[in-house]
Length: 369
Ligand SMILES: [Zn+2]
Image (tube, rainbow, N blue to C red; front, side, top):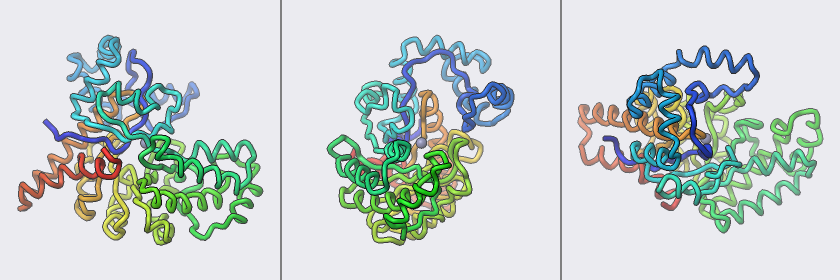
């Protein structure tokens, strides 16, 4: 039996069950017929697909081939099925980014909490508002003002933190000197681009200012780093690109959580975490997709960064099995790391403290559980 986990990063769950297509649990998003056919053909050859299938077959009491239909049957009582998975994975709470699947019922934290039977702390993702206003033709100062309003209202609106996916937009090489004039020019000069790639100086300015507001409000700030779905340009998601931003007054004042273990830049993440007292390392998502090496990746962060600033999560999204599987993978990985460090001489009480910190304590402290 693994330790309890408060999931430091997850997304809404779909509104109902049915047969489960394991190939859909994938970072590749293209929905055209050719891509879907290729995905269906190649997905079973991924280790993550294999292990998820095997574990789920064991959970459902069927063969791997029977998983889609056994899941359809088991999920007829959807709330019971979802809650069963959360209980089986010892999930005790969750930090929710409803910015992905805003339309799902569980984008509302109280609905999610009722479904899984444990507390849920939502965070406010900034990009939906920025993207929408850029698309509507708003100016830089208008967008900056609107974001400031939303951030300042965040605690009263029930949010426990903020989040940016600027890595998916104009990248993590944030220019800390971006001005309002440059911000407006970054809109004026990019009307030929899709909104998501427009306004780099504006997005940079908003991020720096938002870090300052978050610090004033005492809200932790998640920054997407490392891999993600196929929309990401991975070269723009290296956490070291944030160095200049992290040296600003705002970048040193805010509580900054670099998420997803910055896969594949674990040592880089560990260095930023150790060398900057306000930076936290959040480990999630790679435990869904890179499952043969979760213990190795966890150790590469914990080997260097202080455990007092490392948080474990899942990046569960859509299918409730992703929360369950991500939690199992990181719990098993920790047990392996723990046993190895015990053999090296680390004391049992110290290891127990590390376990509590990374699985529940740090997330509970940052997000007010
Ligand atoms: Zn996520």
